[in-house]
Length: 203
Image (cartoon, rainbow, N blue to C red; front, side, top):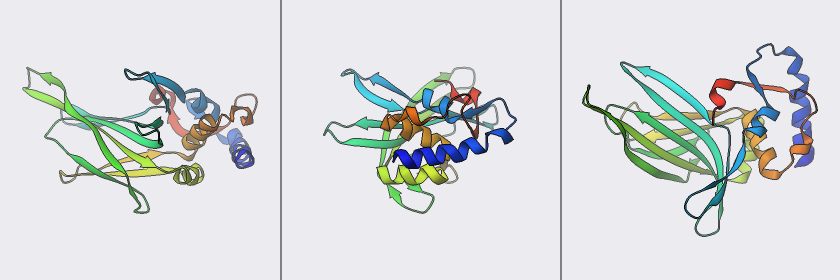
């Protein structure tokens, strides 16, 4: 695994001179934004990847989504690697109900939370909020390290399916943190890796 990571980092490093956008994140940046957190009443440890946010204008209210990778240990002691996506919107519940990879592989899906997040008395409207997860195997993560990760979330409401995309560099940084192989990162400024800009890296 270490040899593969070093080879991939070397290839990314070779592309760094071509990038001119100062806001482009490096693998090193993404590793630093991938952190272990203590969550819940039992203070369980969760590895959480950098958050990627997206807004889509829809009339007077924008759709908002936040997505990231995480690794948890469930109540049965099983380690799970997951894509988590949180969506806030108006216009009736979408009822997300399934998740698949780009090649059609079905993923273990769970609706974590569904509730109203904010109500406006001026417009008599409430934001809907859904949080859903899709489980990934370690092998699926390793494959995504080379070509990126695309997960389709199917909604019961027609026309409201959602796609969560993660560049290969994001998955690479996540696996470096997961495996504790930070030492394989190149020295200096690191390598240019994706078009995710710093504004989307807020935690």
